Picture 1 (tube, rainbow, N blue to C red):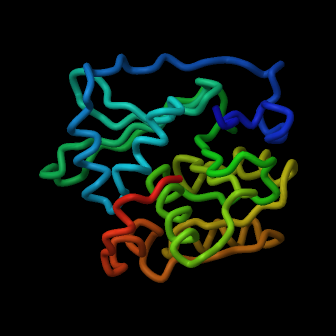
Picture 2 (tube, rainbow, N blue to C red):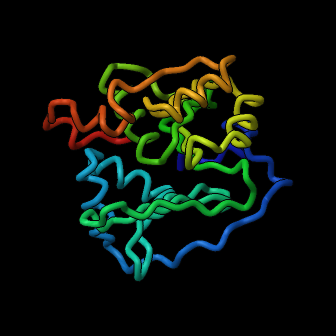
Length: 212
């Protein structure tokens, strides 16, 4: 299997084994997690990409509430997204063993050389897909969600360990974050966030088979 833990030697040392603590994860719903797939595919994320994240244990659907749960391999951070799209403000929450934890995935097998920090897991996935569609080599990148623009402890931890690109939202809060970390390279979505940018791209049949 591909290395999806930054604690592993070839993937860097953003998660040190000595720091291991875990969070209480919501129990998983019985397969096949149809609500999770429907929700993510409605956000422009291809089924093949979701399959890859499921295979590596990085996302599942919770039992009862049917939230999408993004969990890192160390199990010290999870991000929850409500799937009830009719809600006025869909549920979004995080559980962390420590303030500086985060969710991430590695689209390649090589040790990452660049970290892209986004505000949410869906944005991290969307940015990777946008990079792929633009012809960018993503094999040496790691895509990270810090679970909210104000998670400065996670940003500080990441940027000390790997060259980092700040890829937070195109809004006032994102601009304040960019000003606070003005030593970092930044990229800004055209729309509010990377998922908005992804969904506004023309659909292509090949895109439905994309993996990450």
